[in-house]
Length: 181
Image 1 (cartoon, helix red, strand yellow):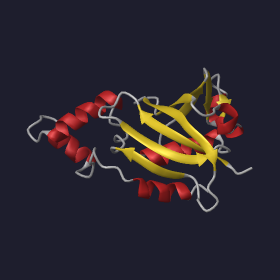
Image 2 (cartoon, rainbow, N blue to C red):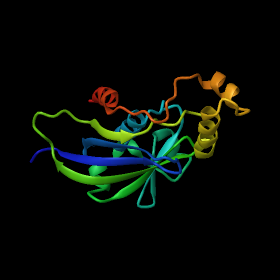
Image 3 (cartoon, rainbow, N blue to C red):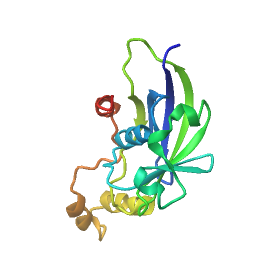
């Protein structure tokens, strides 16, 4: 039987317009590797704590499981917890509270000549780290779109001119994802 590949849609909640990615990854990936896939696909820097919520159970990194009622993400595989059509939540940065909806859109056998994981599509750039969560990002986008906005210059000096909120290219993400294998 060929390896099972999960077609996973990742959608950042409470951000408009929607920021999303579609990735193909082995179902045998443990949740700590799924965490890395989400980080790379979205464009986060992995600078903050995270957790998964699957059917009401919390999963996260080992340093959290002693303090919280949480299962260790390194011990469980994606295909042990979810299947086609199932959804779950990934939260990143408990200060900014970036919540992601993850949905397994399909499960299929691996193509023999295809390397996984890969990012096949998506839309819009990931928000900037430490911008203040969805509300802070809305404020940032509003200020950056209007050079006369009272916060425009301060935010431009803080982050710089390089953030294009509409840009997303899955090619570089796939290059980064391939380094996981």
